[in-house]
Length: 302
Image (cartoon, rainbow, N blue to C red; front, side, top):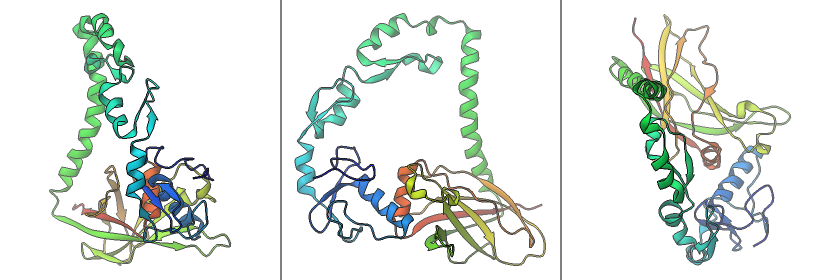
């Protein structure tokens, strides 16, 4: 197994991605690099190829090699905290529960203690921690800051529960399909077929990294989308909308509610972020044949 070009891991599975895929000639790729290769190919409008032999790779052409995965799980791997060697199959448990050098937090974190340190120093720190001795006024300031963070989270969920009480609610499964622009240097974008929600016809569009010139050269990848009303309406239509993962997908999306007033003259929202949690999740979506999500639209009545 040779080194991987383009910043991919030099040895499969040791980057923590989980799983080993192999091309038709038997060359191995960790799951994370495999998805990265498929996403890069999508962005460049090329056929994804094996980094070693350049044969074509895809989710249908490649398969997991369970025998090698089993063998690799028994190889020694280094703990990132204590630098001792453990079989890879035991490493996760060691780092989470057993390592004396693993990073841990003070039990008084709930009242504002910021200490983080190795587990073997925890008992000494907690015995000397000054936070339990703080006055009520001092603790109130700390708790107020924590309450503000919790309040923002609760506002989001309260807003969603409030929207669910609206009279006019519609939702549908949407499928973003990949297309290329007509520019000299084409760019990837996504568009759904037309669909009907709340007796109106709509379309969703999406783009990568806000249509930057070469998103395949960027490690940080994002998707943004816009909602377009295709029907003609007799009066302004005020709506809230959000995208969530579909029923058969495992993409991690943080719910965000967007708001817009649609008219015949102003029937397209601005591009707004698709709130996937990180670039790894974005690569998973780009590597897929299509992107399947669920759209909710709530019509606000005057």
